[in-house]
Amino acid sequence: MRAIVLDAAGQPALTDVPEPDGDGELVRVLACGLCGSDVEKLGRAPAGTVLGHEVVAVAEDGRRVALVHHLPCGECDRCRAGHESTCEAFRAATIVPGGFAERARARETLELPDGVDDATATLAEPLACVLRGAERVPRGRVLIVGHGFVGRLFEEVLRRRGDHVYALDADPARGGRTPNREVDAAVACAPGGGADAARHVAPGGTVLVFAPAGPLDLDDVYRRELHVVGSRSATPRHMRAAIDLLPTLDLPPIDVLPLERFAEGLERYRSRRALKVVFTP
Image (cartoon, rainbow, N blue to C red):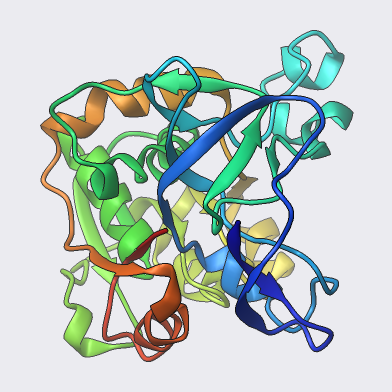
């Protein structure tokens, strides 16, 4: 089968690989979204890696499904405390070899509704991550730092629950509404965005770290009694909620390309010409 495989330098190339064997259900991939975490692994992940975890596929019984990325045990102290992404079991691969391939083995799948197309359905995974993160954001005036695709998902989710949402981005073309006074909470969606997020939060407010946010001034955290919390990835519960919510959202545009145009899609993402890129086998 064909897949996007990282070479010895950690760079992606379309090549033939054996069909995956082992545990899990064999599924036929229909579409897979490019995540910022995939891009971060280029040049770093070992040779032979197949990336991609925002996957929509056809199961063996013909159902169209979203693949669950990571599975917490649900029973350990960390899971019971709501920190499932720190569970020891969470690290295990659930999509083998990865979503940028024609077929994969999946440890858990969730059925998708008929009214959502394949490309849109890949958003279930990033939306699930946003839903989990939003649970840690107090209601009120919220600033999103980083108005890319995930930032816009946060904007949509927070506005739907009744928050007053503002957004900042290093690229003026990505728009957003700048707050005219301090906010109750800020979400750092952009790499290095933590300092900007903290700067706009009122004393006693909350900063949600949702990306590698860079250094924070801990003296400022101490003196203004800020709450700094992190959120990473999602759980099957949040995936189910995201699938139910998807048909109701006003979603940002998606660029859809075949796997053989992976390099083009990657360049569109890196150059910020595309908010979101989804690949089809």
